[in-house]
Length: 135
Image (cartoon, rainbow, N blue to C red; front, side, top):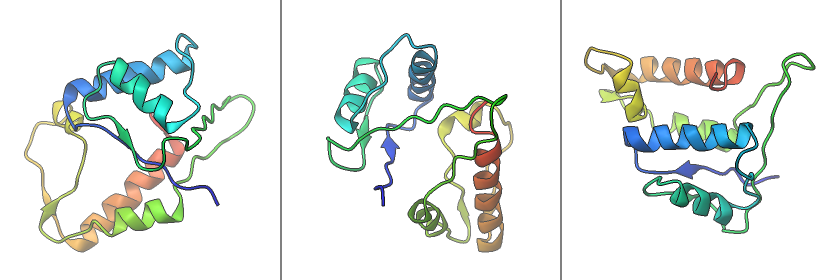
């Protein structure tokens, strides 16, 4: 079974923008796609992303799964351990840990969820990610 990998960087608006730019460079084939976690961290750092790291060893393989919507219907599923980790973060009365860039899209203050509301929100985000992974 493949080790789940988590990409980390400082949760700052600028970092999220730089991360999105780096992903676009890979999509447009203007930047070689990194093949290892160490190469990924190096590219992130070189691109100006602060606090770049990857959970796992430096030689961990990086896999890309581009899809052609005209060819097939693809679903990028989280691993069981990723889902378990998300569900273990549920605490009543706390804010859901959205990345900071969401603050620019929504005006109002964040709501502290009950455990049931948090579990429902996690399920909605996982489901939305699977059918709409970023675009």
